[in-house]
Figure (cartoon, rainbow, N blue to C red):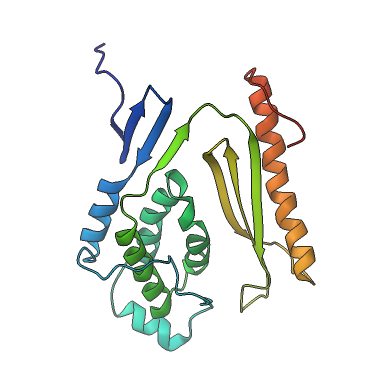
Length: 216
């Protein structure tokens, strides 16, 4: 067995350690560059948002499905490749990915256009990285909801992120399983989902003999 020193790259993730400030920075810049090159978007015009503002995706019409099939593109594979970035280091992609992933079985041309818009956003934010560590261990969760987001089902979407100090350690965007009758109800559901993960994480940290400040 040979000691190769501190880890610098693993599974498409670049690792940078700063022992002075006690942080670990994770980046997927090279992975994203390869992704842009694969889909011929390296020279695309960057955009500042992962989706077109105020846009809502819905089930594709037969004409839109046919137009996409003419492109002969593996939509499921494309979504899977960006999903790896989203779950590893880029929580800011969560909402868009939750939208695009709803149409894996029958994607349409508008879904592909939304995917390419996301690639343009990745081009403009390619240097963003996830930094973990520091001295603070305060645990907190932020949640929000998009009421009746889905045009097809009128279901809302829950989004939340969990922080330890200044480090984002968990994030999620998911559709509600039931239709909410008001924005207030939808927000309570979002708080409930985020709260469950918050309590679980607090108990895990206690098992690891780390101090957790209450109330959360």
